[in-house]
Amino acid sequence: MSLNEYPTIIMKPTDSVATALKDIPSQAEVTVNISEEVSKKITLKEPVAFGHKFAVHTIKKGEDILKYGEVIGRAVRDIEEGEHVHVHNLEGTRGRGDKIVNE
Image (cartoon, rainbow, N blue to C red; front, side, top):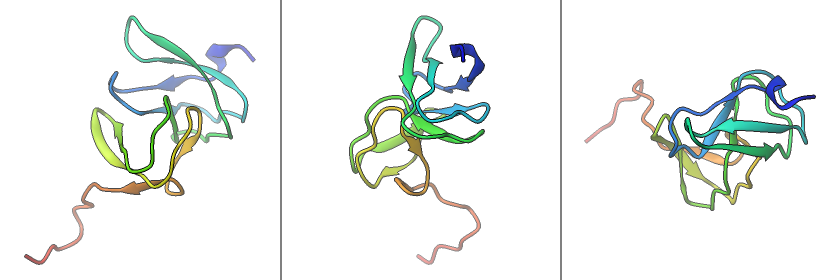
């Protein structure tokens, strides 16, 4: 398949992850447009479903994971470039807004 058959989106150049805009199979090579001037080819290590995230660079255990230019969680283990980023390797750190916090 050609590179443009697997569209992705990244919201900010500082983001650690990109989002798949359709299902992408393992070992597919995708082009992520980091900014208007910078794009990067990444080979996915595993399948990534539509709407799911994958690492655009290596993320070390304990490192913040950025999406939308904001911290969405922390890596619970090292995550390699091209790996699926989800609940198995990301600990959410954003408040849900539906839980009461006792002070």
